[in-house]
Image 1 (cartoon, rainbow, N blue to C red):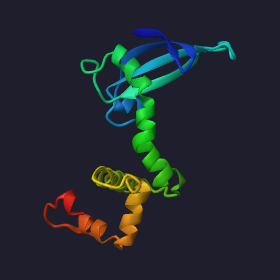
Image 2: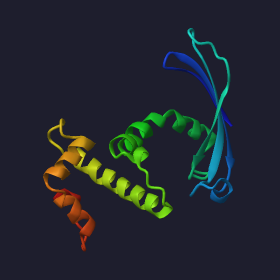
Image 3: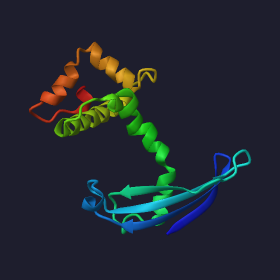
Length: 165
């Protein structure tokens, strides 16, 4: 168990995590090693605390690699995930708008989208012009080159370097 009381965005926030071991089959989520119950109470001048919020966290790391205190710290870093991969997948790649429902097709598209994001992030890092260094800039580049580079990537029979894209 770990707990903190801190100032977060001008509000007093008390948080408590109780971690427990679990399995992927128990909660039907792949690669899960442990879970935790996070309780939070937020109090501010404008909005006094009315209720305790509860949410559950899951991780693929076993307790030996991530204890309750580390889970509490990682939960605070959630915006890094939201503005990184999830933003790219949900907003730019339109993953939430996808109407594919067949299980294998969903998994295949998810893998392809993540591969595209990986290639795009590498491409973005190498852009000298910061105005073009975005997922939209990457898509524009792929469109402008008639997706020749993307086609080369998925049809390569030998190892190719991303710097050749």
